[in-house]
Amino acid sequence: MLNRFSLAVATLLIAVAVAMAQAPEPRGRVVVIVDNSAYPELKEGLDKYAAHVLASHRIVVEPRPDDYYEMQPPAIRDRLRSEYQQRRLPRLVGAIMVGPIPHACRSHDPKQIMVPLPLYYEDFDAVYEDRNGDGVYSDDEITNDRVHNPTEIWTAWWVPPALEREAQVRLLKGFLDKLDRYYRDEITGRDQMLWTAGNVVKVEDVEGWSVLLKDTMKPLDQQLRTWAKIGQDTGTFRPFKMKDEHGPTDFVKAFTLQPWQHAHIIAHGNQRGWYWDNTGVCVARAAGDKPEWSLLMDVSTFGGTAANIVTTSGCSNGNFRGDYVGEHYDRALANILLFSPETITIAYYGAASPQSTSGFASYCTELIESLRADGDSYLAEGYFKKRNHDYSWGTQHFFFRGGDEKILSGDPFARYRDSKPWPADKLKEIEDKIAAAKWIITPEW
Image 1 (cartoon, rainbow, N blue to C red):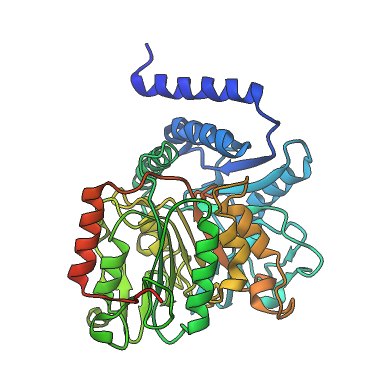
Image 2 (cartoon, rainbow, N blue to C red):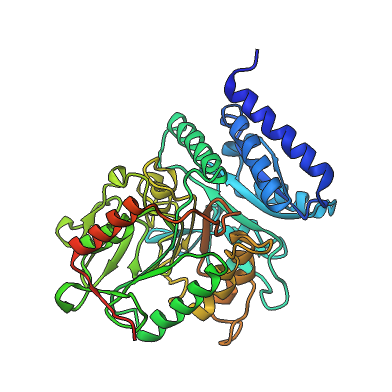
């Protein structure tokens, strides 16, 4: 006899099958790279996720379970290349890497810094020569023609913040449940948050991001709230008593003010947090961290806030390894936000290396515009376009050539979704929090 959960999955799959018979042909295919040891417990959740994606985006999601944890990255790359070269319809557009799948790294000195290299699984024309067999590639071990050869696919990473296999599977099951709730509109956030802080921010950044974010949110009736010490946008929150800069408690109050649809954060960063003017916030500490200079955020107290989609401009904010050397998945900012049951975060984009994803809005246009609620675009499509854009400063700059990595984690199909306006009591709660924070609000001009 089917239990309620299995019956719900069967009902959803039947509904999708009926819709497929009436809908246009799928426009793309994505493979899920998942280890055999985890797949049996994840299969039901992955089936539900695949049904949601097909219904929302006409993209087919196909699991490819195997003993990946025992493989080396070259073997996994060959598997993805083979999938791509099949050239069957629908065409392969991306791969979702479930769990801590073995991955190549990039480094100038492996004893000091190693960063994940998603490009290794995305660009099949590039030549990687691992001369000493350590899985870490320096500049002279990579040959690629990024000017004339775009990447073939995109990747998205689901790396749970745990080191033990059983804990990883448990967290992955929870994340799949979170995605199901997201696609059922049970945890859809509302409005956009723009946080800018520190000496990396100029007025052009604030104004440029304000225009880009507001334009992308159309035609939804939602608003942008900005925290900045500069800029003239109506409704910008400035520091209390016009201090030089917002503090770390201001960030936590802003990030948990409400369940956001999207938060973009411009500040310095590392794998564990955001930093500015000798202060900042983090989700975990590493050896050598000085507790007095940053605020440790307790994500377990967030109570269903944060943002569905988090994008960042800071260095190393997307590095799912959690540190520059070694694998510390339980310390990584992206992993902790995505897999916490106390956040609504389902997608995250940031830099893998100590190099910004860009504080300039104009260089992130493809990425952000892919979030529009109208049309067929989605976050990974914007990631793919940004990855292959030359920009105005030439093809040798790191933003284009992919040498300093960027990483997309979580749901690659995230985009803005409509949501009901906050009820009166929720609006009052938000306004009371704003009043208690004592931020200075820029008046209408």
